[in-house]
Length: 342
Image (cartoon, rainbow, N blue to C red; front, side, top):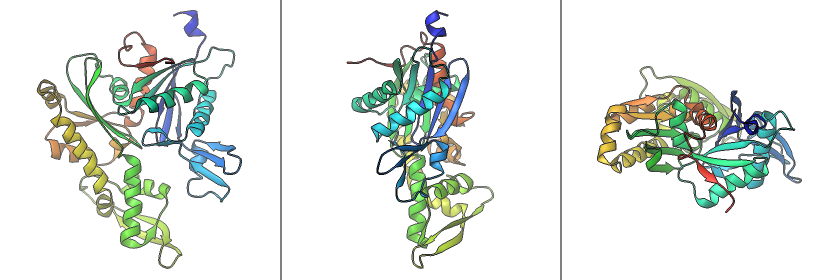
């Protein structure tokens, strides 16, 4: 190990629409915070970042705004993303006298050149010495410990907050990828719309997320459940409580779930026959927060007739992959998008 490496704190970042996870080489995952920043509207002064800011979503007084600077897996608000990144980097890079860190950041596989530059610039401005971009499905595959360099095909479905990435990986490359901007956020939105349209009940984003986690499913459950929710009655204008069954939640989320399943089917149709037979043996691997939606594996299995496996700890697969790449840059140099100044 060179002196150079000892003097720098290299970090891997899974910069997600919903959450950002950071790992430090040799230490593991050190930070997992919501990608939310609370700012003062008039001065654009940052008041809170991460969990403290997420608490404020939908609850802020007029002069404070809780912003999610990433939309659909890419940077929507450049300035705020930079503040979010530099805050997280400062939290994990303890020693100021060390060299600036080398950073591996995961990005959606369908990202454009302009979006890549935005990620790279914000990481450099936030204090990175060198930035490497790693496609999310590749990061997830490496994080699970799959041999991405082998010629055998692997199918990864990474469902995050903003994007669902479906990729077939072989020989250190992505053979075909489908990146749809339908994921956890759309599931939340569909619950909000369903209640508004059918029951004249308005709920916030955080409540919708809670409903999805506690009562959401993509396949009929063995024992259906119900959840009590609080919101505002749009007709009377007063707070109201209502019971919602898991079947209703499933109905509410059916459109985005169908869209994700359809994207998986289309991806399979485009897969070369040799790799398709590998997938038949190995199955489809689900990663990302969306993999935790109950019954999603059964639903995909029913639609594709393929084995479907939910990865262990699907939320951290991508950041673990970024960490593995940092640990062994030589082995994985073919999979990272080296980003130098053009």
